[in-house]
Image (cartoon, rainbow, N blue to C red; front, side, top):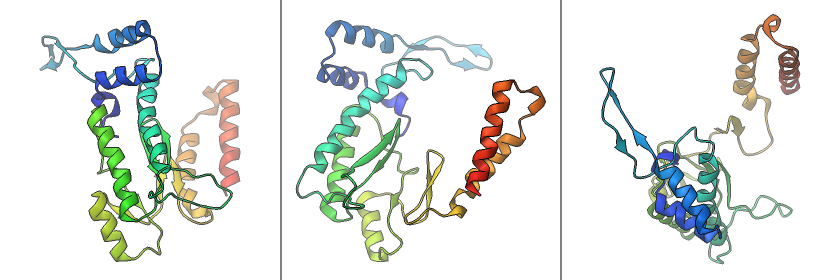
Length: 227
């Protein structure tokens, strides 16, 4: 999502809270909390006059992550309903794996569907409706359609035209972990291992507490496990 906290509309949050059955008193408390937001920009080192916000929730507020998750739950349930449509080509990995339409963590979402036009357009339709109702926008510059390396060039071009998003079969990072089809290979974790090594080398063990030293040793053991 593009600036998920800043773009979400307040009426959408109220609608979702009512749909989940929250009491009007609690909804009023939430609305007063998110709507009482003023900004004062600093111009040439001098604070200017205040202006009021009309959408979005404040980053850093302890209540904001929970409100954002509740709002995104409406998007999640729309995807689940889409997966129940007979004409929608759902993604299957193995016979023992349950049908998965999406995986989400905060504003990072992975969507799963077949590559036919009906399925892709159905998924895009859910995204467009969510954008219209919530005020949020899909960041297409940071998004990617991931396909298998055996998918033909013509099919990749079709998927690119339908979605307007870059199509690739290269491995990618999701929440810091490499994603790639097939068996996991050691070379996929080289970047992650180097990052952990750099973090460990920056720690001065003599300045760490007992708990800090224990964490450092656990990270070292973790790095050796990947080798």
